[in-house]
Image (cartoon, rainbow, N blue to C red; front, side):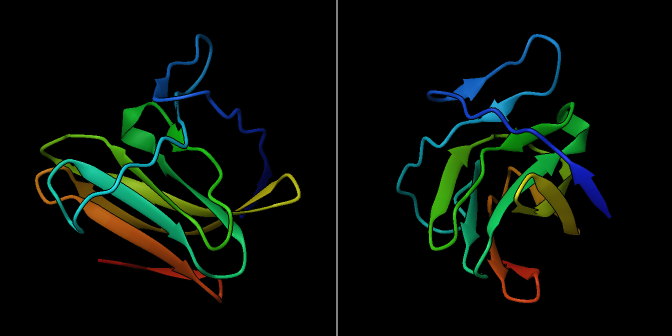
Length: 119
């Protein structure tokens, strides 16, 4: 599925859009893998990627360039759908979905294909 998308990059923290979904900025923090409340997206597949939480009103991460990771605190204590996308010249290409639960934390790593794995 392809769709055109414009992603605003917030200056820091969590930006709340007045007329649309919120965007998680690129405020990375060091953390142990799978620490409760934290989510990390690592782009390792040769492309830029981002994640979206439809149950949080379309909350999205900023674009994560190939070879970099974004770590943010999301909290949460229930299972939530996370959609993962490749971003290519203004087009968002859906890769797949998984479940995030803030009680466990999660790291998604994109790989060539495009695809991803969860740890």
